[in-house]
Length: 136
View 1 (cartoon, rainbow, N blue to C red):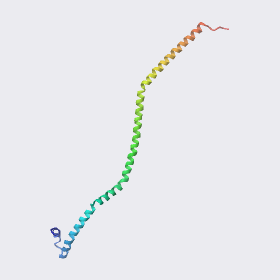
View 2: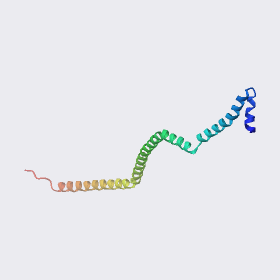
View 3: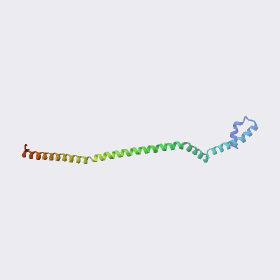
View 4: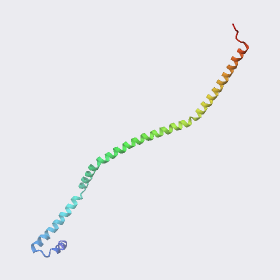
């Protein structure tokens, strides 16, 4: 009873009946306030608030997820393109040995053709010099 008496100290200027009403109503209002506090913080209410939060934020999160997946697909395509280009460049640099070999073979073939042309030119010029054409 000390607690209601402590709360009633501010009620000394009220009439006797008001003090009695206050003495009865203070514990009732305190209990009511405590009950409201318990109800407001009950786990089911917390779960309801959590559900509200999820319902409000889920569409935005789904949109962000969709955007991220799209960006991932685009970046994977870009990565594949860059890797393919790097591979092509590496293959081109590795093929320089073959191009050098082809270049030397072509030079050798041209030199052989020039030698054959020169040998044919001598062989056709020599028989003509030996056998002059007859005049009619």
